Length: 153
Image (tube, rainbow, N blue to C red; front, side):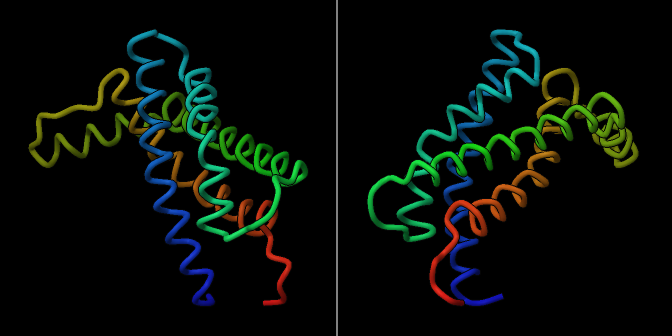
């Protein structure tokens, strides 16, 4: 991997930490306080977190300059929708089909720990695991499609 790609991945990750905090905050409030379904909560969380992400990644991470490009914005939105769908699909698979939060509870019990991932915290845990997959999708989509450099590498 080239040095510039590593630098971009690190910057993308830093922006991602901020956006992830926003995403998880909105998701948790929607899920736990307003009792909204986890998939709908993820749609709202993605929409809110995505607002600043385009500008920060465009100018800082991928160093794009110039006017806003409608095609690029549409590509950004499509990439984020695909990433969001991956999060929703895998979060639901991990929580509702595979019950990985319950596996984790078994492991915690074997280790002698009394903490358990119950209710909304179990959903949040499954969302964290699903987010690892969507992070890769989002980065690759942004790097190679949305903010694809016109320079020869």
